[in-house]
Length: 204
Image (cartoon, rainbow, N blue to C red; front, side, top):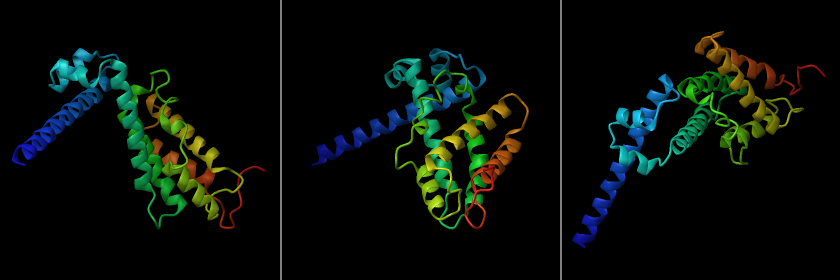
């Protein structure tokens, strides 16, 4: 029994160590690639403080590392959505939180924007039925808070498109991140929130 417990503790320690190493490489990649999107795995390994052989054990190629970063973007975008959607929040309040949140994630991972396919291949571009934002859009439309002449799937796609356009405004220097976040929130609100009677206010 004692030997089994010792082995379990050792295995758990090894897993924790592996997780710390992986997290260190991810954090280093975000720092390095933000300054130089073409930085090599050698540079990232040196910045992480993790032995290069261990880095390659977690990420055999640079593309494996980039894919892990894209997965992290998806996780953070979902976190923005779940944080914005609180039980008593109105649609206007939710969009007011989503706008700045989308820009914050875009700012953090700006270095991925120039990679072909990095966004269009992301899972959020092809949402599953249980995607939190799609669920919220569906329920809000059913409650009459959003325009009933727009499907939840269409609104979902347009939110992602508008978010990308807003981040582009920051990238080219036409807006600060704060300005873009607020303007995106207002755009989402004006575009999707229905009048009190549930009717659309846009052009017929």
